[in-house]
Amino acid sequence: ITFPLLDRYNNVLGFTKRWLIEKPKSNDKYINSPNSEIFNKGMYLYGIQNIDEDFPEIRITEGTFDVILAQKYGAKNVFATLGTAFTEKHMEILQHYNKIPVFCMDGDEAGLKAIERSAKMLAENGMYCKVLILPDKKDLADISLEQKENIEQYIQENSITYGNYKLNKEMSLYTSKANELKLKYY
Image (cartoon, rainbow, N blue to C red):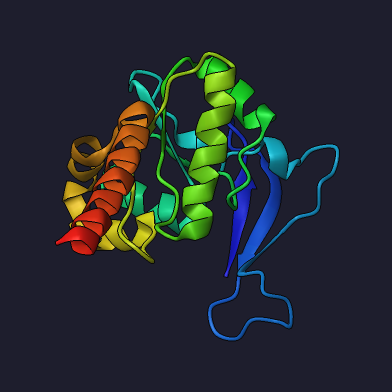
């Protein structure tokens, strides 16, 4: 299936294809137009033409289906980086809109690493962000299909500040180590 890559003003900049049945020899699920004078994946956000200027957040996810399904069921300002690579150019776009970024990357190791990299980049540049940690092996498209019209509420209720995420992660590690010690000595 092929999707047009539109800019803020609905101009076609390129295309992205997703393999639905059989992938070619490469492991890539998606094939994007090559970088050119008019399209640069490192500074592109899929779905940006649907931005709601009055909504205070921008939700960043990985893929086109995440955006399409979340928007279909009413989630606002959901955009995709077309993969896990969040760049400095993406950060500049967020700074331009002056909205709170919420990272909604896939619930896998690559998605969690992307959240860590992205949040660190923002923090180094004095930007605050939130995160939505998705269940293991699920993406925002999966959650949108489960939640349907409740997806916006789900995002709002389950997003936490990156600081809280880091604190929860450290507390979980501490609890795990404490339990190991208890088992060792009891």
